[in-house]
Amino acid sequence: MTFNIHGGYLEAIVRGYRAGLLTAADYNNLCQCETLDDIKMHLSATEYGPYLQNEPSPLHTTTIVEKCTLKLVDEYKHMLCQATEPLSTFLEYITYGHMIDNVVLIVTGTLHERDVQELLEKCHPLGMFDSIATLAVAQNMRELYRLVLVDTPLAPYFSECITSEDLDDMNIEIMRNTLYKAYLEDFYKFCQKLGGATAEIMSDLLAFEADRRAVNITINSIGTELTRDDRRKLYSNFGLLYPYGHEELAVCEDIDQVRGVMEKYPPYQSIFSKLSYGESQMLDKAFYEEEVKRLCLAFEQQFHYGVFFAYMRLREQEIRNLMWISECVAQNQKSRVHDSVVFIF
Amino acid sequence: MMEDQEEKGNAENGIGRQKQVKDEYLLQFLDSLDGYLTLLDSLSSTLSQGWLELASARHAMGASRINGALLDLKVHAAATSLKVSEQDVDSMESQPCFTLCKWASSDNGERSSGEEKSLSPQLRHRNNSQLSGIISSPQRQKSLSVFGVLVSPKLRSAQLSFERALETLVEIANLHTTMLSMFEQVHKELENTNG
Image 1 (tube, each protein chain N blue to C red):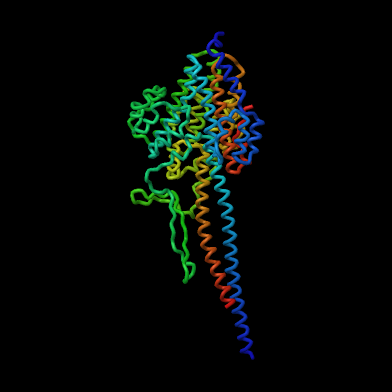
Image 2 (tube, rainbow over the protein chains, first blue to last red):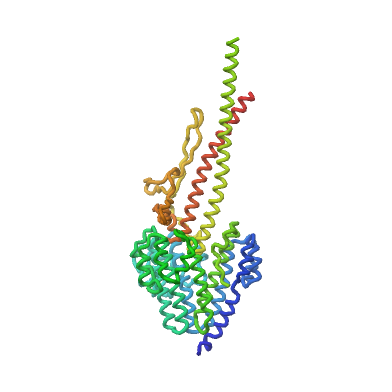
């Protein structure tokens, strides 16, 4: 009843932002473009126009993605600076995933003797923090934590992966997934504490995210050095698949065994029914379509924070769509453009 | 008179054999040219597929996980190398022969077992275990580890496509050498005929 006192203005803002998402008609126009300059011309009539108008030709696909991401960042910062507690903490939680990605990018790039400035340019702007460049100095996870991450929001997530082992590709991968698991569980608990419609809607969205992560970890680890125990440890401790689905996924050796596990859960039956046997190429698109459906449903209710999370994720999906369309146009593969585009409206 | 006819017959046989040899060289040249053009076409489509699969992997995993800034600049031995040897075509000539040595590491001065180009590729289709067949080689896995250990199957497919493209390039180089050699032979035969 008192939601509108502190959150009413920003909910109206985010619903206005949502109205600016690209429609199926926009995507149909974009899919028919012959060059990246055509894409720029079509986007100039959308809310991305001001961000792309000064970009010189020849355009590159990464430029289009960067400028579209800047729009998302501007909108996020506008909402964050207007938000009060607990909405401001909720909005910050949305960016911790990008922070984890940036930490791993810097650490991996430093391991490969890359220049820190070059790595910083590749970081996602939503995941930046002040001492991020200092990450390049750390030799192991203990130093990473002590020198840099202890003063960041990621500090509580490090308790499960602090070791003195030197950072190598496997340790970094385990660190990435352990941090993300801890972040998702923490975000879930925070939403539960908020209660009401926020808890109800965010529980569903975060549970889906946790389940999707479990499936992706399983498929990506098939045939690698990751043991079954290590794989099991990377799954989050919530979600529809927890705990019995996780036990079965941990021992899967191929995509059809994964399918066999997932088809026992009705919400995921429809996803896997779209795939033919032995195939995993269209799985990502099937999961994105399901996610978009759930995110759009979040806007059907009022007076909850789920709309902010849903909007950010829908914009990220839109940017992924634009990235794919740009790549297909640039590589002269327009026949494949509908392989990965997920319509939002 | 009989001797004249015999000589005439021998001369005709000689001319016939020469013509046969010329036709053979010409056919071999045309075959190698046809093979060369087919391989060029195959290379183009394999590379297109590889680039699209790489874009698809970047779409699935995110731009922060698949980008040029993650490539390893540390000094390390090449995972794949090209061996050039001389092959005797006949007793007079030799031509270069290119052999691809895939996934062989020369770290610490020892050559671990690599794959010669002539071996069948790592991709084994066994029932539905396409994924584990693709990533059976440790060196193949290691080369992708710059992007992380748990990478999407799309990235592995892209790796296979670029591997196939590399094999095709080596075949093109060998066929190109054969084609040039056949062309020289045809040219020589034509000069002999005209001379």
